[in-house]
Length: 392
Image 1 (spheres, rainbow, N blue to C red):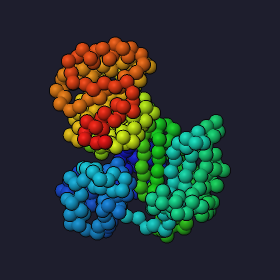
Image 2 (image 1 turned 180 degrees about the vertical axis):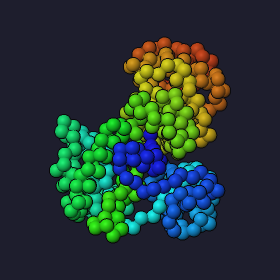
Image 3 (image 1 turned 180 degrees about the horizontal axis):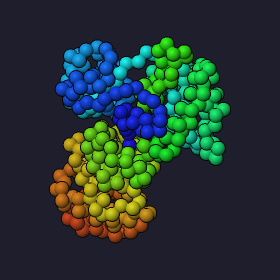
Image 4 (image 1 turned 120 degrees about the horizontal axis):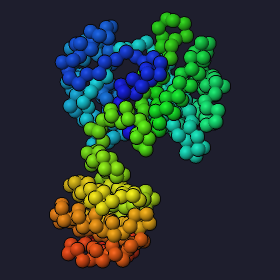
């Protein structure tokens, strides 16, 4: 679950980390009050969406009058902003963060994430802040600094100093960076984050010596599996930022990701789902979604998952591939039968069942009176689904 920038910065402030002053608006008529509260002669209007690349996409505007700010707000609010991360559909803009402008001497990059290869939490930093870190890693990998955290000791001061020296900080900035990094690590752990990214982390040029360190932007992603103990964060989730089908699936605890094909997939197990989508592609088709019903699904969950697949108007056929281990084949069969009867399915449905209670599941489908194409072989099932939509 992702947070908006203004929400992430509120979390930082709760931990004593200073951020630029800002006001959130949802209408152009609120801009005058925002400017009055912030003061100054220039402001930055930032579209609040769950995607990076907002600046290049026109979602970040520097304005120098209330009139220009209101015009920018009127143009952005209610629109869909498309960036390199959310193309081609984009995401709706329903809020803007209006922030004070700050004098910037340098832009740095700092993030914390889970390094699965190292099996530890890792810090990533770079002096090339304000840029796409993926591009920096490709073109100038020597500019990427990393520190892995021992879970026993936690983030150590010397690691913070290593990063600070590598970033070219000096004097009081080094101690300030170490303190910031240790606090961010605390935020990462206590809020069950999967990603905490500050890009850019700026060094101000305000005539106060070496300049302060401030997070000019902040991105936070919360681990979905920990939301049960992060109720305050779960309560502020903005589900308008994700596909409506994905929001519906999340509400029913089903793992669903919308794709651009026309063959709907229902599978149990992420690995099997990936293999199923690969076979559809290999057979000349395109999957319309990733959907994993998991091992503890009930017939009602399966029925709901099936309805979510069918809510996509691009879906012209459905391939159900279930290996019954924890999930029994008869439960899947009952869910499919219930969903088909309730929705009134008119498109081809291909079912491949194997595993626990497979004979009972196949018998239930055969005796249901529904037009369901059955297959005992996954490769054949994939070819049948592709053929049903006019493919190979």
